[in-house]
Length: 263
Image (cartoon, rainbow, N blue to C red; front, side, top):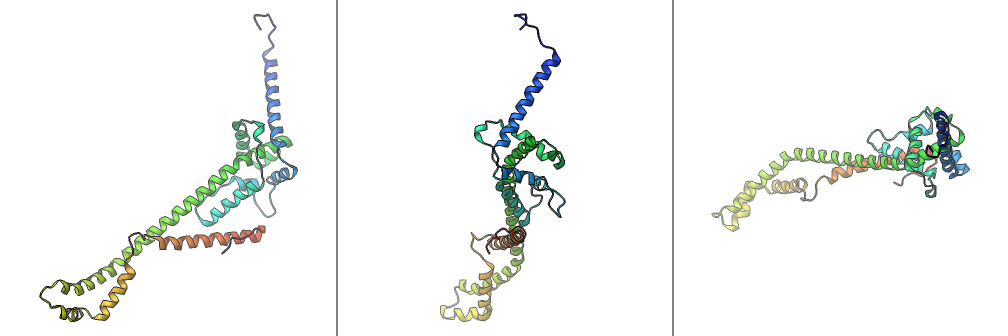
């Protein structure tokens, strides 16, 4: 422009032009995101900003809060959160060719800002912001549910291993007593001076038949195969976890008319 002796615009005029251009790009982004949803979907997004009767927070606040503890009810709530997000059926069309960082910026605003601030946005921008938020929330909600399940199973297996270790330590005294009884009974078998026809009588003279039979029964209950570790304790923990999930789902289904888990 200087070479062709073109009069350069003033700085303020150039700034206004850039700001106007950026505003046009923002409006186009909002329009593209908002045009990909139907009227029922838009009504569902608007419903997220309302506080239900008897509740202290909106549905948007509930969706923004992930699982905070490791338990069966927390996992059920995480799965319900994922199901709620998926039920909105919000997806950004691939043909829109929108940069992921632009969608992430809108979603970040909806995730951090107050619900009242989101509700005061213009209609087009509010719809686009909620679309971006729900679109990105599905992946994070799924990750939270998987992480909650992983942590819960890790806790169940850890508790089962600890319980099994304590049970094995408690059984050592009984196992020692049974081993001493069997050692007394088997010692005559290694004595070469005893004739074979007197061996049974000599064994039962040292250890009575009833005592030996009781020791064998107790030994069969105390020992276990090498590949059997703590599955019994783990099964009890898993049964408790399943019962907890069934109880939570039954309560939720009675409130929200959802089908409960089968017993």
